[in-house]
Length: 216
Image (cartoon, rainbow, N blue to C red; front, side, top):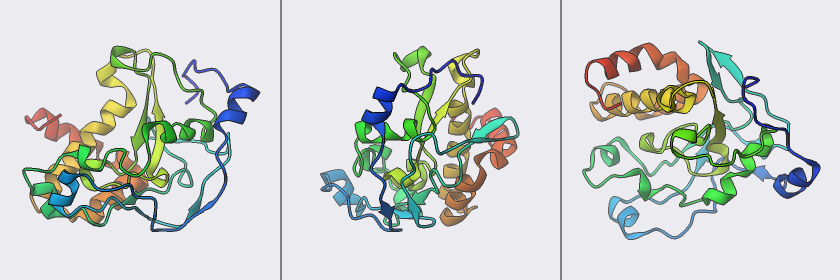
């Protein structure tokens, strides 16, 4: 993401942010205790990643561009899902992404993903000044995992309105795919694996969905 004026990390930053390298299995055992809303929906807050992976070191991941938008290095992360979230879960009126948001890894723990891509966490990164989002590659509204194997920093571009930043554009795709799954037109697993492989492949359909009055 060369266009971002985000400074490189200092040696001190690297020492603080450098993750402890360890192997991740395809099923995480780090799930936090369920809250009442999760329990009522039968959601367990656990992660299965699409392949086995190892937490990367600092500066070891590089995004690529598809259709003019960034997609993460396929190693960082591979993406994954919470298998306890089903299409019926997504159709339940009680379902909210907060049921599993930060249930397995805290917001602070997710910040290590910046170091994987050699990005210093932006200051004042909120509201109209938000440049980066620690994004769930497979979104929570599609039953995405909350573990680190599904987190990447989606940043930029600066010289646009907030609504046109990359993470906001990806939100359109997430909303479109969630609508397709709830309507029974797309299998949940297909949506999860498809968005993890290349979220930009759905941009045309997502834009038409938004233009026709979809939730965007």
